[in-house]
Image (cartoon, rainbow, N blue to C red; front, side, top):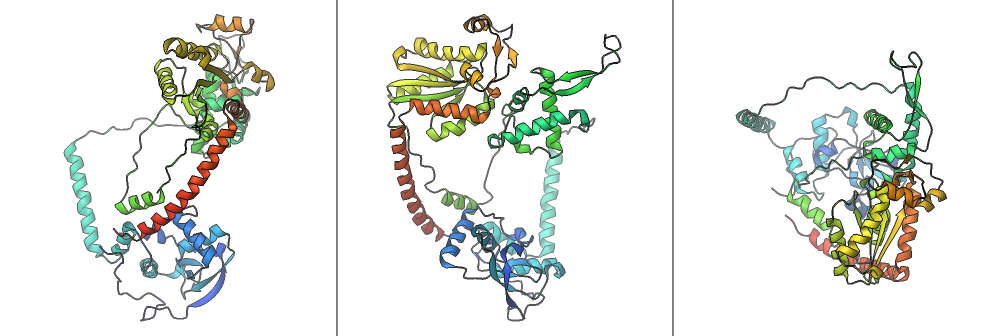
Length: 495
């Protein structure tokens, strides 16, 4: 198969015998008024303004101007120039000179209009998949149809041979509309989700705990006839209990199903799935490799530091938030989920040992409760006593939740230490009889991350770190030039 499509030989409405278009004219149009032809996506891959090729075209137009005008219909649909249109939008250009054909898309035959788009793009650089879609326009429809049905019939026969029984679905799922009495609960959920927009996706726990800062009614309960308050409606206030948590979970499900809350706002990291990302063809793979050329280099910004620093967070619900801070410092960050296993501490010890650094500094974020407080001490004595890290070389810092933060941010008491906790007595004694506990999610994300950033900057030599950042920027500039030179060379290679 060659890189150009075959001409069908048919003459389109408004097209002269020599391939030109009679009465075509040049008109100055607003870029915003031009409309992409939906048929274009039947032939060519969809692009957006952030596509690398569009960005390169926009830069070329900015530097050297537009060499070829878009071709449009009388009703402003683009026949040729979809990529140029995106590039002009990216540049913020208001006006563009266009070639207007003497036809309207609304009146054109759909098949002829598709061929018209193909004919105007014969000289365009295309990938293999786009070329194949062009060639299909000239294929015998009866032959293609018979071939497709043959494949389908073969697939059906294969399914029958397998003989795998399928499940007959029984029952139905009915979700009730959200009642008026739950509107305050809904309003507060939306307030939390929008207020933490930059930290999406959130978890149900990440929505539940901020709701505890508000005193509101989540619903009502009518006591059973055998109960003392029979006949009188009882208020159910939002509390840190399973019923309240499940009420929020249920509302989040319904709000996502009715489109009020975007699906990407909430995630469940405890149920992972494996998704494969194969390529449709080798051309697509080559284009990705060309775009990613020399893009995997990261300078080690911590190589000048005297200390080995790591960050540990107790739970997955805040892990992706913490990364917003730790990634810019290239700090190893772990989600411990309580660290019931010794393996994570051993891996940390090995990283410290292999680094050859002077000290090991561990920054911990955990709940302010018996288990969360105990984790900081487990970290210390495990690294010291089990793996032999000298006490004077080991520093443990808790960046949240701390007593200081409770007072600083005036956090409301949400719960008390569980009676079932094996560390309860130790915790209560350390707090002089106070049984109050606070979850990490009680901290506003901005405040938690700002405090974490302060702690990190306090244990790093920031002058040395910034010097490494400057060197990294210089190296990236050199790589950018090398990437352009090699990419230009690769564009000359045809599959």
